[in-house]
Structures are given as C-alpha cells and as structure tokens.
Length: 366
Image 1 (cartoon, rainbow, N blue to C red):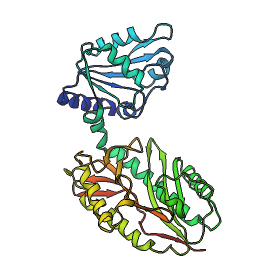
Image 2: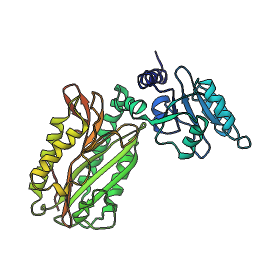
Image 3: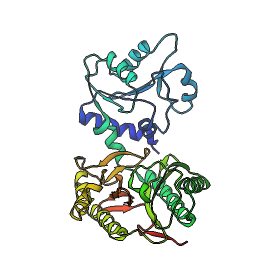
Image 4: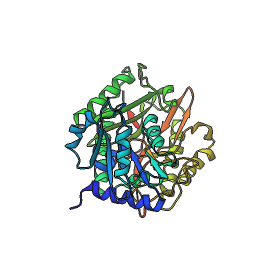
C-alpha cells in the first residue's frame, strides 16, 4: 500500500509540472502536516522542506535532526548555530535539482526571514504562493479527512446540545463557555474557540466572550469549535432565554433562507463568489444588507480557516471534495445578532452537511 506522503508528494509534483514550478519550499506547519503527516519543531532556526522535480530534502537545524529522523527518511542537510544555514541550504538546493530554480513556490505561512534566505540563494527566481499547487491539493478532502471532520462535527453537535441544556438566566457568558470547553474535553477534543454573544453582544460577529449575565429575552449567538485527531469543528447556532426579542423570528427566517440559497448554489464548477452572492442577495433583498458584514464562508481542513474562501470576489472554482462553511449573518447593533453556520463537503450533486443539528432557534425555558 502506498504511503500517504508518497502519494501526496507525487500529486504535488504533478501540479508543479502543470504550473512549471521548479521548487516548492515548505516550512513547519499545516502544509507540511498535510504533505508528510508531521512537522519538526518550529522556531527561529531556518527549517525547510524543499521539493524539486524529482527529489526532496530538508534544510534541518542540528537541534531538530535526531527527533525528526524518527518520522521520515527524507534526506537532511543539517546546520548548527555556529555554522549558520547558508552552506546547508546551497547543498539542499543542489540535492533536489533546484540550485538554478527560476520559478519558486513559497509556503505563504513561513517566516519572512526564511523566505528571504531562500530567495537570496536564488537571485534569478520569481516566486508565487501555494494557491495553485499545494493549496489546491489541500482543498479536496479524501475519505480519511472526511471521516475525521465528520467525527469532529458530531462532537461539536453534542457540545452545542450540552450548551443549550445549560442555559439559565443569571449565568455569565464565561460560565456557559466553560461548560462548552468542558464538554469538548470530555470527548477527547481540545477546545479551539468559544464565542458566546448574548443580547447586544451578539451583534459583534467575533465577540470576546465576557462577564455579561444572560437575561430573559436575550438572543445568544453560540459559535464553537474543537479539535481531535488533527482536524477541527466549527458550528454556530442560536438560542434565546425565554421569549425571543421583538423582530427576532423574521430575521432568523431571513438568515435561514440565505443559508438555503447558498446550499442550493453550491455545485462543482461554480465560482466561490456565486455562493456568496446567493446568500447575500437574500439578505440585501430583505433590507438587511448593511448588517451582513463578513464573507459567507471559509474552507476547513487541518486549519480551521483555509481555502476556499467564500467571498464576494473569490473566483476559485469549487470542486467535488472541497470542505467549507456556509455562515451568513445579520447583526443589528444594540439589539442582537443571528448567524447560522454549516460545514459542508461538496459532492457531485451538491453539498453534504456535516452537522446533524437543526438550525432552529433553541428556547431555554426559565
């Protein structure tokens, strides 16, 4: 059976050939995790995986070499603090057949000093980022990735249900957030984020969960995510304490229709901006366009936010296997906010939703 890293390196080289890239340089982080299944300790010492047309090699600090060798048989070109990385980098570039590289793909998340070191060693090279090579490959999830995202979605569903069941007037946003964190931990997941925006705080899409006490009539935005087995979850649902505020039902219905419009528009071959346009049109036509202040969605994989981004300007063509959020919202200052979020995987006939939790308003009875 082919090792996943071997298969992914082969796919990367195919995309390099189609883009006429001579070298892909990857720093420790999520790109390397996806490609190899691990990454060395990241610090200020230059560490790069260099992928050439036929061979790959590491520029590797001596301090990291022994521990990293347990994870890979890829060649190392090591350097120590007293030597510096310049000679080792030159040797690594020679090893992978890229010492004269003209077209270099840089990991856009690498430190600027790493990038400048590499480009300084290749003075005649132009550079691009990974959008059309490694990034494009990462956008399409395989069956193993699907299963892990689905598992995490189930954990998030149960955590949201635990939050719903715990809502009481007088408890603070922070107390509800602690219940959310505890539930993720009870399922073996690491809590990643916990937005609890009650009443007027819900009108801030990225509200910093605080000490406000939940009150009768509060609408509550609950946006949560955890991480297990290297993959995250992300879900947003709405709850209300007692009776919903005036006008809430109408706005919730508009946001729900925006979600449905985006789901209907999401098909292979459609540009990402068309999904955003479908959701945004519903909200604009209802007279709330100025209150929809963010993009419709973002990709999800090893990173909680990654391509494809579902924005008003993105011309990324959606493909089968891509995973992304659909999360339109309406935020009315001083009153409440409403966001409904699904993570979906795009299938041949449209999106499959990971969550099994309805988007209906949950009413906490006093």
